[in-house]
Image 1 (tube, rainbow, N blue to C red):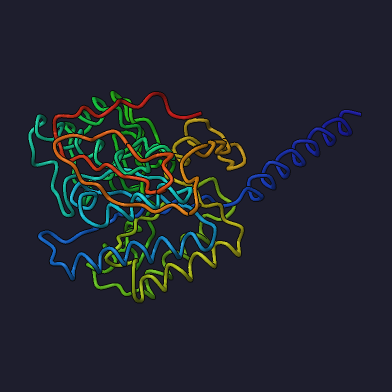
Image 2 (cartoon, one colour):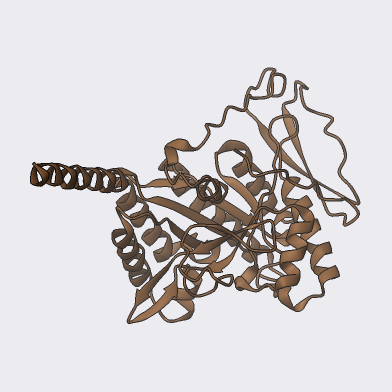
Length: 358
């Protein structure tokens, strides 16, 4: 009798373990694409036009597959013509808009706390100004330090302005103390924000960060980039680990790197992967439920008056103002010209975000 009972218990335990493993493997692999919208320093008109087209092309390729990503913009990007594209992305898609620093290649960790705080406040204001008056609002939750460069003064400044996550970390390579094994976002001790580790993968016996610019700078071509993305995806499929990929528009916005990204997205879609924004990724980590079905559905309603008239399409015009934003004066007018106010004043306080969206 004892043997029968013991056998039944062991059988029950085995079935429970198998069911748990089956449920884990049934959950789709979670993928987060983080896009650094770049603009060369002192860009010529031609360079700016190329940078704008790169952002448009990578956005179009992701959206045409009905996927999402998070776009991080610097101040110089927002006040350029690319700011209009940033606004279109935030208005016409489920993409998330987030902030980077003042300019591409910035070393924010070399700045004093006061200068970091002033710059980060302004970055938040700039990106949150990328909206269509009366039709959508933009709240910045996340920050991407250029070149992963930051320090504890950066952490303090991010807390001060209410930033909820920071992508300047690499799984197993660049992490907060005690989190060397973490692959999901985690709360940084002593601060209020979540660290978002970019995924890493072993290439030629070396663990490297899955960032396209790292591959290019280290002599690895687009084929090797694609192989690393697929290799990492296959490695973690069925495991409780997300795939967090860092992209730059200067590379993945055109040519072979864009081809590699397209090919990878098609591969991941064929494997039923779930693409999420970075804020969604943080919410999954915060809840402890790593199932995308637990994420809330966007139920925001469109503006009831904007866009009415003879032409129902939305025409987005840029209005760059100094020193502060002016209220929208055109929403609901028959002209249907939705104005975007992009502030370039450093006197406006960035609104602090509340708790992480449930």
